[in-house]
Length: 477
Ligand code: GLU
Image (cartoon, rainbow, N blue to C red; front, side):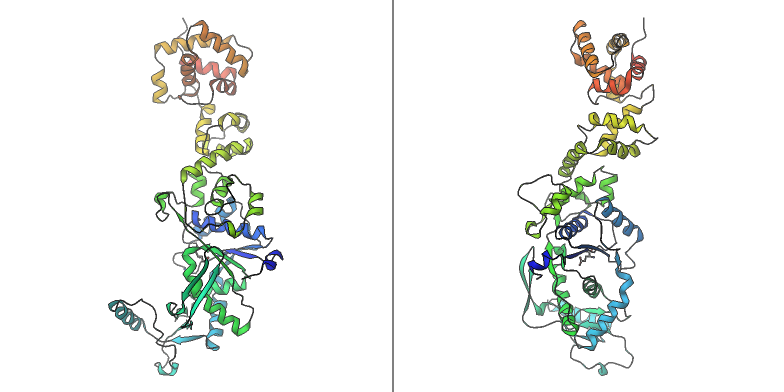
């Protein structure tokens, strides 16, 4: 374990190491966030490594989406990303060092040999793992020029204990860790070797990742220990294996639970990055019962002690609720810019910004915000929703005509004056204000839900309001 002193000296180096076979999903985003916060908290370095060794499944779209998602969440890195695929030569070099020092060996087992071995293990109900058949054999026993893989010589007796910063002490019997392949017969390194070599070369001090990698840590340690013996300086990193995120029914997170790429939360769900940031932060980490935590506070407060040991549950509703809160906090001009794209056809940003305090009071996401703003830019005659059209019967159209006549005399087009005017008009007609407001809303917005009716009048302005009412009112007699 790195000492507490080490932490204070700013020697913390973390890395986020996504495999670009898919987008930046919720679990990955949280891992990225925790690594980033931990590095920032201790004044260390946050690094990024793209684990693109699976050439068939890694795509450049996925790499772009991951970089874009991290950027959107505001997670920045202290060095350019390391691409694992570019380091195969270095990985092979370490495999050769291990081989030369006797910490690894050549295995000449053919695919058929291994298949037969597995079939036997299956039949005997034994765990399926490589049985070490070439561990102590002399390579000269292999046929001349036969292909071989390089396997790590893992310890066979006793057990290994990891002091995991989240899980506590976890022990595994060494007999359970087989001599896995580090270099394939075609000379390419395996993932297990690549991770260890890259973490060392990048100076990673703390490995914070999902607990689905806990077993890998036990398999990775023999390489670290062997290399430390060979050349020194291969310190064991601090491990922190964070419990996975589950869906709100407790089952493993999937699309069905709303597990999407970060860009889908942004584009399809209209989530603000600060909302996702805060939501992810508290998904598996807590600081008392603190709810909204700013970025700066998160950096100040984040330590691994706050990471819980049990899986957290993802709840899209909570995220949306939180998003509503952040929308209300957000700068109006920024929100106007964000929903302008959703509204299309270059809406008037100044008008949108002016309308924002009224629009944002209820919206839980940018789509709702855009929907609420749409009335501002509708063309006459307004298209009516079915409900709004249903409201506008002959009586209602008569009322609209009287409202028109009243509003036409109104020169003080302010919230207060309009409210006073329509209220007294309702009283004169001996009607509830709703009887006027409902058809008025339909005429002004084409819908039955909108911000407060006086706000709508003010935002549309005198001329446009009157024209919209006139278009729906009974013919003037
Ligand atoms: N590339 C692995 C993943 O995306 C992470 C490996 C690691 O963190 O050690 O699951």
